[in-house]
Length: 220
Ligand code: SF4
Image (cartoon, rainbow, N blue to C red):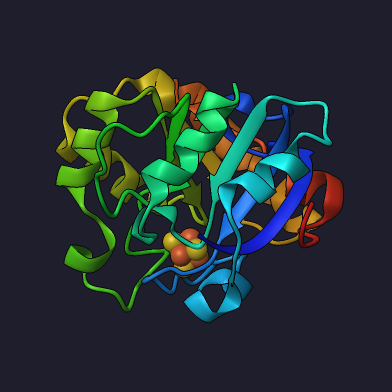
């Protein structure tokens, strides 16, 4: 498996926000999102081949059973199921962060954390290449899930509502909206109006602890 980063931190987003977790960042992603905060991991060449057993040994140094596998885009890595199974068999509770570009069955997931990529995040990418609604429908039908949307402007909320409607079977309590921000001051400013929108609609507001606590610092 091509590994870009391994670190220990708090889960920053979604329903497990605040949970101490080991993070494994896989290298490689076919997308080029405008606000990508892990551009250093998008090329496959940005990873080094490491075995699950080696990483399992490293993970055991930390006081948590929560593992977050992120990217890049983990779903495009060959051998993902076998890789995750090593950690699941060792008792880890696995969150997989994905843009939902592909569906893979029988992954040992505690949480499929899906971030659909809308036109605002990838304006130069045709919808067919960035938003695979069929794959997302299969993921949310099979796995415990959350849908996370990054919101830059109030106007973005229309496209998010359209995406949720097209998906058809989404539990509103599993939808998280997060302010688009690379730095703390921007995060606080956008959080205020986004929090108001969440109160009006019933969607959950997700913090982004890595921005709030560490100002977007890499590996935190
Ligand atoms: S899907 Fe994720 S890793 Fe890939 S470009 Fe978009 S934000 Fe970056």
